[in-house]
Length: 437
Ligand code: 5AD
Ligand code: SF4
Image (cartoon, rainbow, N blue to C red; front, side, top):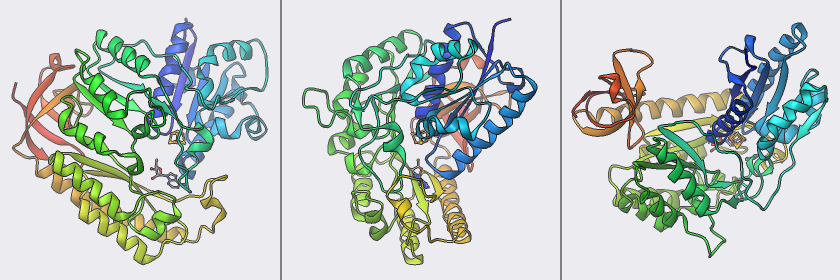
C-alpha cells in the first residue's frame, strides 16, 4: 500500500492551485490522496492569513492533527501557505509536533522536505522568497475540464488592511510565452476553461514594455484552439484599464464575469484603506463595463467595521450596493493583521456593530442576488457541464458564462460538454434549467 496524504486547504484560488500542485508532486513520488485524515501518513494544512478567522481555523485543525500524532508518532504534519510564510520557524515553538513549514514560494521542495523529515530531520522550514523573479512552480499533470493558470504573483498595492504583500511578495509577472504554452498543453488533455490567477491580474506586466499587456494576453489565449472559456481573478479597480474593459466585448471566449472588489462605499474609508480609487471612479468603471457588455455579471468583496467606519460611512456601502446591484458579494468583518498599516490604528468598531453591519449588508445582497437569478428565468444560457449534481444523481451541474451554477436533468454523458440550457427557476444560490441541445 502506497503512502497516503491528506491536504486541507484554506484561502483563495491561489492556495487551491498550490494544493493541486503539491498533490501532483506527491503523486509523482508514489503518494495517494486520501479524504480521511485518520488514515493519512502525511497531513498538510495549506493556510490563509488574510483575516483572523481562516487563520484561527487553520490553527485549530493543526491542533487536532497534533493530538493524532501523539497516538501515532509516525504521521508527518506540515503547514504550508500564508500562515507558514508569515510564521516561519516560530511555528515550531507554537505547535510542538509540527514537522515542517513550507512557504508558497518553496512548494517545489516538498518531496525533498518530506524525504528529510522521514529520515528524522527536525524543524524543517522552507520559506525564503525570491522577490523580483516569478517563481516557476511545478504544473499539475492531471486531466481537468477547468484549470487554473498562474500569470502573476504578489501584489504592490499595499491596501492598508492587507497582509498579502508581506506574505506573497512584490508583483512579478510570468512570461506570456510560458503562460500560452501551459494553456496550449492543457487544451491537449481536454481542458476547456481556464482561470488566470494572480493577486492583481490586471496589473499583468504593467511595467514591462516588452511583454504583452493583459488584454493582449487575453486575445492570444482566445486564439488557442479548444480553449472555450477564459476567466481571471482577482482584479483591482486601480489597474482595470480601458483595454481590459474593451476585451469583454471583443474577446470571444472571455466570459462575461468580473470579480472587482470595492471594499467600502465611503471615500473617507477608501482613502484610509489606501485603495487608490474613489466611490465615483468605481461606479464609473461599472457603468463602462455595462455599456460594453450589458449582461456582464459583476461580483465583489466588501468589508465592514474598518477602523473609524461610522454609521454614515456604512450607509454609503449599502448605497453603493444598491446602485450597482452586484450579482454576488463576498462580505467580511475587518480584522487587524499584524504588520499592516491599519493594524496600528485602533480596531474601534465593536464586534456586535461589525456583526450587525455584516448581517444588514448580507440581507440586502440576498434580495439582490435572488432578484437577479429570477430575472434569468426563461433565458437560454450556455453551460459548461462539470458533472453530476451533488444533491441529485439524476441531474447534471455546470456553470453559465456569467459563473452561475445551473442544475438540470440530463445524461451523464454531457459531462465536459458545452450545452444550451433554458433557465426554468432562479434560486438563491443557483439556477434550475432544462437541457436544450
Ligand atoms: N480584514 C477583513 N477582511 C479582509 N480582507 C483582506 N484583508 C482583510 C482584513 N484585514 C478581505 C478583502 C479582500 C478579501 C480577500 O478579504 O475584502 O478582498
Ligand atoms: Fe489567504 Fe491572501 Fe494567502 Fe490567498 S494570498 S491564501 S487570500 S492570505
